[in-house]
Amino acid sequence: MKNFGVKLSLFLNYFVFAILLNSVGIVILKSLNNYGVAEDTASILEAFKDLPIAIVSFLVASFLPRIGYKKAMLIALALVTLGCIAMYFGNSFDTAKLLFATVGASFALIKVSVYSVIGLVTNGTKEHNSLMSSIEGVFMFGIALAYYLFPAFNTAGDPNAWLNVYWLLAAMTTISFIILLFTKFENPPQPEGSDLKDDFIEMFKLLSKLLIIVFVISAFLFVMIEQGIMTWLPTFNERVLGLTENMAIMMASILAISLGIGRLMAGVLTRRINWIYILSICTIISMALVYFVLPELLNLETQKIEDITDIPLLGFAFPIIGLFIAPIYPLLNSVVLSALPKKVHSPMTGLIVIFSALGGTLGSRIIGYLFKEVGAQKAFYFTLIPMLVLLICYFILKRLTDKNELQA
Image (tube, rainbow, N blue to C red; front, side, top):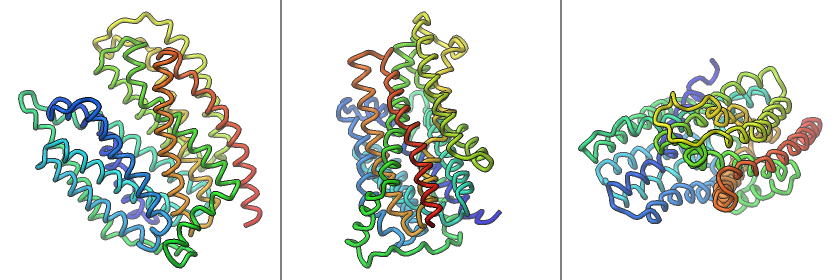
């Protein structure tokens, strides 16, 4: 397979970072129980993870080609390996803050590099769509694995046993580092600017294009939907379905698994079917699930369920929405990146990361506000609004990308 080593490295990098990024909720719980910190204090770990992602993406995306994608990813993997080892020996809340700051900053380097390298190792929109969807699919499986990997290291009577997971994670990042180190990379196209100031100007010039404006709105809306559902689904499961806390969390992992399967399936389908048909059909089905399945869930008798076999089949229906919203994000990213010259893929990815972070933060807060004001039973209905706007955006993007291809 052409560029097999490069692609394998991209998959491994994304997979291990998915586990680390999604572990923040687990480490918050451990901080409450092991380090004796208060809830409001523990919640700051989320900021230590998210803010470095946005800040580093903003600062480095435009000139990352000057550094080199391979070197940037090696730096990120080395930093995270040290962070994992430090967490094991540090075993404190302050070390946890340092770990997530390192993970966030390093993920910014990884994501910008991965998205840019995809453009270098693929030919044509369909191949780009396929690889992007597959890599994002593997990312979702990494997220799902975190729900089971960390608990596997828990030992009754030993509050520090869970820290052994960081040796495994450090080993994974080290293996990825070694594979990447011996993989030959194509040199990225150099940016047009002559210095850092020019690089920033070139990045923000992209926002003057209608294609980019429509895209960042679409990416913002999708991440708002995905993060809003993913963050608040455990609460929905507990309050509406009457699941125990542990069961509510386990059921939420079904969403991550279905997102992973959906993205891998999209990676296969986009080789044969145009992206506009896949996204339109998937969004319409997602809207139907929200509109028709949610009322049925609300009519279920609320009771405490102790075992997964006690959950009615209808209870599994809503998390399956992940299968259908899954292709949206990677295909939108791929469609726009493959329509742009490869020399602007790095700054464009910086914009993707920034607006995705904003969408994720806002989506979680909006759904949280709705849970409080209108109740868990009705909050998810409001996702129909951004889904409808997304559907309109697809056709605008299709027209703009077709026009862009004709001008190329």
